[in-house]
Image 1: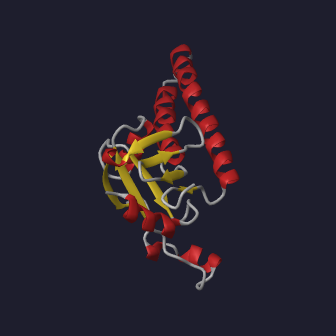
Image 2: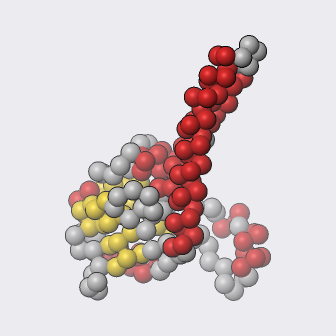
Image 3: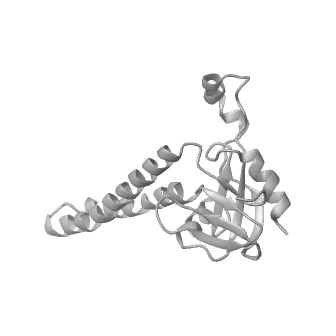
Length: 179
């Protein structure tokens, strides 16, 4: 890799991969269970509540998609951004398709992290920081992230100091490479 191309992996690549697999399995179980719940509601008298649980099961898939898609490992280069999700194909975007760069709105405020500050220690504690890239041309699951982040249904990815190694280097290189 040249000085102008850098890979920003997950803080714990193995943990990231395991969490991706667990999230996909959980979403699959919820998606498969919903039709069975509807069949049970129709087949069993007085079991109409299963329709509600089926709808709830399907609704719970959206936060799982957020967790799977929000902060993938990323590579920055002169040409653009390459997103390398744990599940799915990598996506390469040019800088022209990155329409906005904003602070990530789903980061917890500093005053809400009292427990984290105690566990990590006051000297090692760093407030949560994140940058989100609003990009055109990403798959639909990144539109779910945009909806949760308050960007409507625009595709969004994020890089944070909690999920990525070398976040400060990412911010510096992003400022250098983005035209």
